[in-house]
Image (cartoon, rainbow, N blue to C red; front, side, top):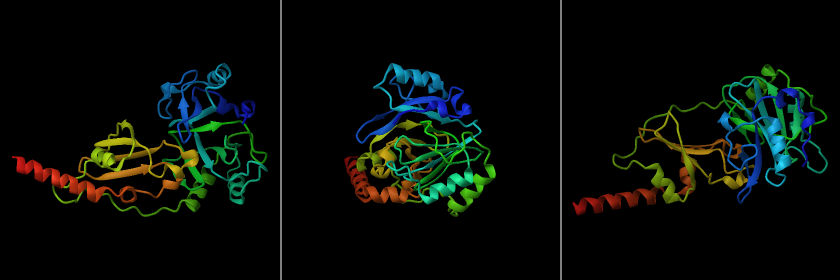
Length: 289
């Protein structure tokens, strides 16, 4: 689809918060790029962001290199992005009743997504964390939103203050589930699972290790439920292990919002085999001594 960036609110045009993006891989996923290059950009690294003008000029110079532009929602931004997925008929432009209701309540700038099946809505608000469920995702920072400038006719042309309205929507849609307190690893002594070996045994693709002050090791991985992600996006999935041996799995995509380590482990189904193999290896090493 074309870009109509002249229709963007001025405040989303200014600043060096922008990136280019393109489709890569099979299945295709959106990959952020530093304007004018094929180097990957990051929604959490300001050094990889550029101005909107630089991104648009890069698209003009390299017509076949990029699919579009986006704006990063930085931690110090006054914005929250609301992503409505699969709510618009690309042919008729008709919106689902739920999308119409959310647009009416938040009443701020909103535009059609590149797929033409979704809606990106911007409001001025402040949240501590993101909220995700199928069809509706809310991001306060550490995320980028594509920009098309294809403004919805029922939306405002400006980004409006909607703190109270957004909080009310979140309270209604994202009912808080009481979380069980975390506890240290309580497995059988000597049977502690090594995360890297576990992922390797299960055939999980590791994309890289990332620093995390709260855990011993954290890895970016390809989610085993990637086919359920929008456009089969490979990003946003992590698996990690704390110093006490406890393991965790987290995927940012709405379809995986309720999935934790237990579901991840059971879906892959290598634990029993994995632990048996380690036990046999220990017995062999013991016999060798």
